[in-house]
Length: 434
Ligand code: ATP
Ligand code: MG
Image (cartoon, rainbow, N blue to C red; front, top):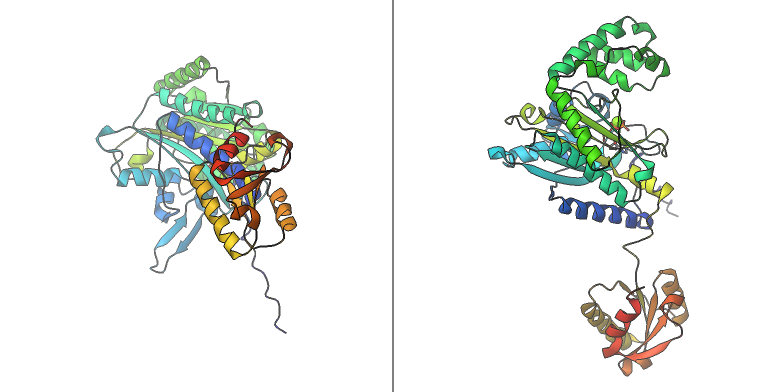
């Protein structure tokens, strides 16, 4: 006897999104697409694989992502490729390469899709995860920063999540200001070097700003008396930040200024922000963004100001599951079409079903396939969650009729038989205003 083959499992940290939950994903995606259209943003779709250099040059060699999280491999031509760990780099690359930034054009773009990072999988942290990202180019003033934060807020509001998230904002200033601060921070922390956590000791040389993010209590205690970034900010950054705060006040968006917020990636300047929740344990950041005025130039273009953000879709879904599960399932069917009879009956019923779909383009209907008794089909109809069953047996089909049976109280009682030509209008009225 042949041995049963060992089944193959998914890759750790790269879960399936099953039909039972994909409805909520579709709802999120549609809500985002509608919202972005409302603000005049256009969708861009970038490849999932890019040259490794793109991420090294943009994200920065000494960041967590580039140092230890990238899925990098050689293709058959020995070119080093990387599964994108985030969307901004690819978006800038695509915009530059295709002339979207030429002639001082302004661009408002959005995208969504899978990202890949080799991390320790846990709740809200995966190796393949999805981001919804928004990027704008060519606008240097803080009105666009405020617009982006407003969009994120409206989106969260639409999902019923605004009570469960907090907005933190900060300005990390110009590159010069940041370098001056960095030097002062290193000088201060060097005295305590041996007391810092291991990661922070390493970062003291490579990426000292990240130490501000440290989760170690001991390190945080040392940081209490560290120099304050705000004392180093250049005037322009200060003014822009003040304006941003005033604009957020004007549209009633509440925020906290967190002067420890620096963001993990190298390319940010001036405004940085995060939406955080306390409902998801350690993986609390659901949306993060900021200004990155030097990135386009760093990737070979002219200097083009830019600002954007990315939301983690898994974390959004987790938060929705905990506080506000989406009831509206776009995949829910309205009608289950029961077809019971010989081949001729099945053929005629198929024609009926197709005509009905033409007459009712919004209708969501499963046509039964695979035969079986009326009773077993009825069970499937119930299980499908449909509101109404249509029944075509040989008697009905012969007379160009079909029976209608509501499966849930609010769609009527009892079974009735109608002529096929009246079916669409009757079904339409039964399904409307429910
Ligand atoms: P974290 O500090 O949680 O690792 P990050 O700073 O690395 O986040 P960003 O690069 O700013 O994250 O990505 C934007 C958003 O994408 C995050 O706020 C989060 O919601 C989501 N995200 C990032 N990494 C993951 C992951 N491994 N799994 C699921 N979601 C993620
Ligand atoms: Mg990370």
